[in-house]
Image 1 (cartoon, rainbow, N blue to C red):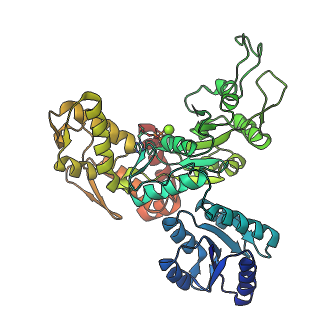
Image 2 (image 1 turned 120 degrees about the vertical axis):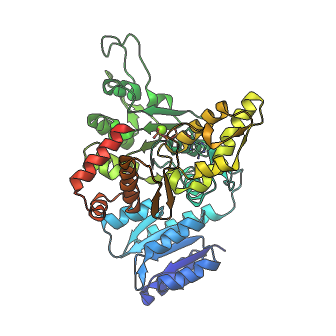
Image 3 (image 1 turned 60 degrees about the horizontal axis):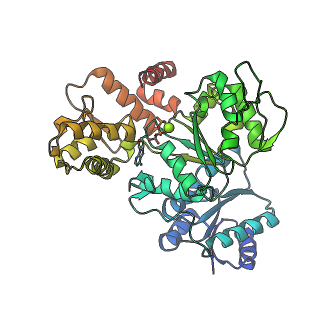
Length: 446
Ligand SMILES: Nc1ncnc2c1ncn2[C@@H]1O[C@H](COP(=O)(O)OP(=O)(O)OP(=O)(O)O)[C@@H](O)[C@H]1O
Ligand SMILES: [Mg+2]
């Protein structure tokens, strides 16, 4: 029998709700506060968790994060009397299945419970997406907690048709994650197409995406199908979505809502069945506030948000990534070069602003220079352990240029405050304007 954990401090309400859940053939455990629920979760993995956000000893979000970090299949529903936009968005971002407001729509709740039960019963056919091994999922490599969370999110998102919004610094593997979602979905026999909105000239994006009819403009000698039509039945990856001109974002929103495209110069509406995965290496909220991304489009795309952690937050993955990249070179060239232990220590003490892409290139560079064993001296200039990062503290080696230190220090503080610029500026004792100026400089450098 599937199991449910219900966390609500209103005991009368909770017992009525528990009865309803039991009627749906769940075994229910009720807890009145965060502590009790955490104790229960330490030994049990319920199929469904229903949690009130406001609890006497803390926030229900603590439980949401706990469940998300350990259980792949548990469905979490947040129930609250206070539906505020911020907490809704935060809950949905944390992977919450649904957000139910009191008074509850009982019919809807029953449907949710039935759907969750159907998903927890063993699948009849082969799994669309095999369970992730400890050190990777498809082309993605890494066994850190952050990567395991990513695999869990991919596996949750893949079987649905929801839009996925991937954010993460450059080189963290957003495109790879998008292709993994496609490969794990039942669209995998159909195309996976990627368009980089930052690389296509603004005036061509519309024809690239939506296609054009013959004679739509001077050079349009023949009809052209756009990405949406060509990806029909499959997945379209919209990379650097914040670089798409705003007027096109309006058109995109319309396509997502109507599920039809109209070719440039055409009138006919052509139905399309395409799953969208969008990505950006900017902070999406900042992109909205700076006018690079329409908020309504963000909401539409944020059905399933996934953030990929920078490599410096998962240094434990460096060994396995480095070994894998080296193995690829060895296999391609019929060699048996190895990574010296001191080289690994060296790689693990660098902060990798270019993330996995930079590591991959660095291994390629060192592979060429090394005879049998890759040593610290074989890595490109610039890959230097200028700063050793441990927990939330930074250690700087003597001789580090001051502007480099300042940059790392500012970025680390920003990270520490989860991207909150006001708090970062306050902590650093600089004005918000100075912080923005520095961040713009860093962006221009990269
Ligand atoms: N977890 C990973 N395992 C193996 N290879 C990875 C991983 N993450 C990234 N890579 C490799 O690093 C490179 C960059 O990855 P990808 O293009 O997916 O990054 P991105 O986040 O889309 O970067 P950008 O924002 O610059 O477009 C690719 O060569 C990819 O194969
Ligand atoms: Mg990319």
